[in-house]
Length: 117
Image (tube, rainbow, N blue to C red; front, side, top):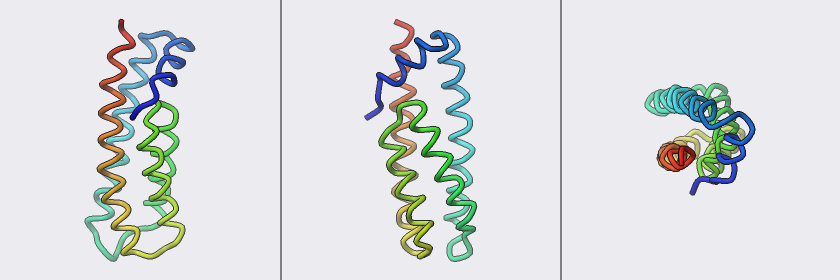
């Protein structure tokens, strides 16, 4: 579940219109990173763990910044799996993380519509 307090604070800090524009950038950036994670896990045993770790770290930061806390936890789990280095565990964690992150981002963007009110 997204943290609406973070979204409200963002809108308070930069204004609602700017916050909504930043959320559009959040959506674009996270989608690019999720696509990279998806491409990596489709490559199977030849995954680039270093790149996957970088994407997980970036997704965690983005999710925390915009209140997608479940997504951040899922990205952290993927980051830790990459650190452990076991490919099968990384792949399983990545599949679960992708679903959770996508769902939480969608919920965050939906919740952000309430900033206009």
